[in-house]
Length: 301
Image (cartoon, rainbow, N blue to C red; front, side, top):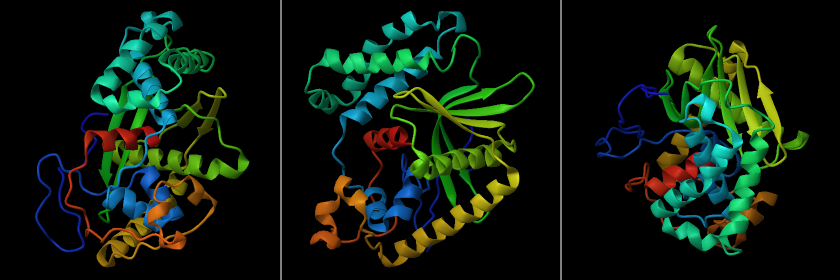
């Protein structure tokens, strides 16, 4: 989605200050960062403000390769998007990613062929859910940014946007994991509403459908957004952004212990478990977001 950002980067600190330098991205809410703050403000701080690196996972690398293959696939003419051609895109995609981030090769401890076989199985499963030769996406792997009327900035990475000849718009996101069960659908619905709101605010169009494609168990979760519901959701996001800025003024990002702590890289730094966070760096942090951080955020969405 080209030209989707409303304004050039500027300062969004509670008090006026110098604008970010070249390459800096202003602080914003993405679906994953919003969920981080809702689940645990301290996790949000350590991830989004302190930018403390997390241990990369093999699953995230696998997801990156799958996304790269599907992006490359839709860059081909429609008649050439068959499964055999998709299979030929896997190794070049892996080589490109490893060249950009050599450290990911260290995660493939069981051998490259089993890893690529897992990627291949996910791509093969995709063809049971959609036929990529039958339509032409308008955009793929687009970064979308929009500033709401009250100053809250939303940012997200949209895997694919389809526009029908009659004008209906569909937003598609690929997931390499399994579809959530009934008790975990809230997070998926939150992400779908987030994307729907961004499209509404950047294009003035209410998407007809939002689609999450889960490749591991070959399921599709769809959502038909309602304009009134999205306006309520917009107010929710604005309130969440206000809460983040309030925490940013004081540095008060308390931990919120839960069962998720067992899966958190920041647990050793958490006061709830006897740890000590680093000194608060201020809002926003002075560091420039690296390409690796941007990529990690894109895959996590």
